[in-house]
Amino acid sequence: MTQPVPVRRAAAHRPLLLDLFCCAGGAATGYHRAGFDVVGIDIVHRPNYPFTFHRADALTFLADLITTGEINRFAFVHGSPPCQAGCALTVGTNASRGWGRTHVQLIPALRDLLEATDLPYVIEQPTGKAPIRRDLTLCGLTLCGESFGLGVLRHRVFELGRWSTVQPPHPRHRGPVRGYRHGVYREGPYVAAYGSGGGKATVPEMQAAMGITWTNVREELTEAIPPAYTQHIGTAFLASTRTLEVAA
Image 1 (cartoon, one colour):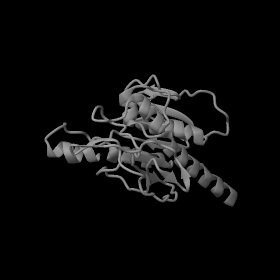
Image 2: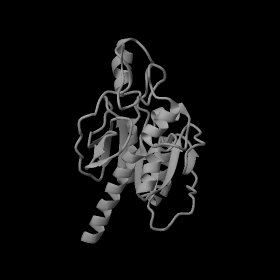
Image 3: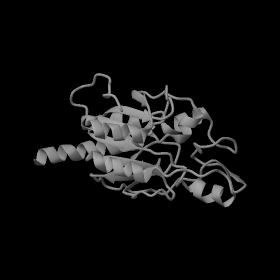
Image 4: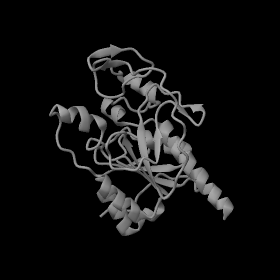
């Protein structure tokens, strides 16, 4: 059974966010910048995670929070379950060549638990065949007229539960991602923040391209989303709740 969630002392006006499958904290950092305090859960030890962290199975931890009523301490939940079961690389190139292994799809079970919380939530995944609604799509280009200033494209889709926000325009890419693709090497203004070799980004390049400086672990960087994405999402959510409070 999950014990009461200890968190670092925070200002009373900052709502608490639960960050499931948190990895090294790319999403968490964006939410923190938007105005949340964050508690992260991951089945792997993440010493670089910059906020309160618990090592646990995310679905079991969430189920226990619901059972004990501890979930009521939170205002919002973000979930980034492992993407291999539905990402474009796994279901496309790797599957066609007989590479890889079978992956368990956790999204349906996660969604059921998130619905049981009665809280607003986000489920994040790469573009591909993940079974989520594409309520919002972000990449590393321009958002609502202001540049993210990122050196990656890193398209991500988000299912928004119990709240909504406006989809920003998706501008044309300035060029290709640097590296080999289908046997051809191309230079470009963006780096590939995944894998290694073949012109893909070095660790310092990934850190600079995504705005993530607190970890230099390649695996954590390749799985991270840029904090700018969730800063945008968190800011939009908090603005919507303030609007509702004023209207009430």
